[in-house]
Image (cartoon, rainbow, N blue to C red):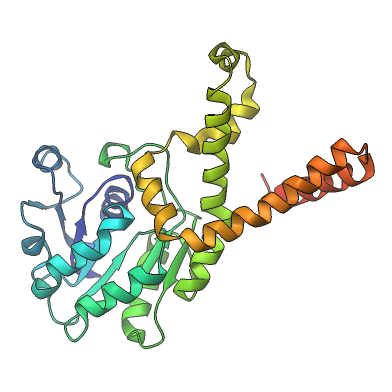
Length: 282
């Protein structure tokens, strides 16, 4: 049981964290803070938090568990902003999709007072804002927990237990390993979907109405917020570039097989792709 849970910047993910904690009875009190006054006014009308604060440092004061949920490029600065107001031995985690430098800087910001343990739930939507939050968003979804070698093991276990209580499937990895993995399974797919849509946007716009569900399914994530994803690509630049180069090699092999009428090689690529996709199950 968490005595006081604070969620900073409760958009889709943060709002889902608060709703999931409330529905599962994980915290006696849930506080939230949002930078925008109009969002704070809307949050005062919801039932899944107990108090809405105008100042982030006031929201975390006395809280024993804090989840930091702004866009990934604002997480470290927000942790630094509230660090001096954290309760002694408070546990602080986040939901950012890039971990390497973020975990090191956020951990340094709270050192000697509280404990920072990086998290990244692999859950979300192309929609944003707490109005789209879902208490079951994390059910059955992977969630990375990314401690540093010197992170307090009790704090790490509290974060692991927290996400498991939200029904996530926890995977513990080094921050750098996390960034390599998500560059391939999350950031690369988003880049491809966006580039595909940008390519099609240069063609006749009427073609869009003639597309089947395959294009819609393939490109759904391209509808996500461009500023959020610009920051993700910027912060995980080197790993994303490596994943793009690997994809380019495969695409060039596909192109060469098609150009050379090498339909055995073409079929082999299609077969490998099908086998990988079938591994997801239904």
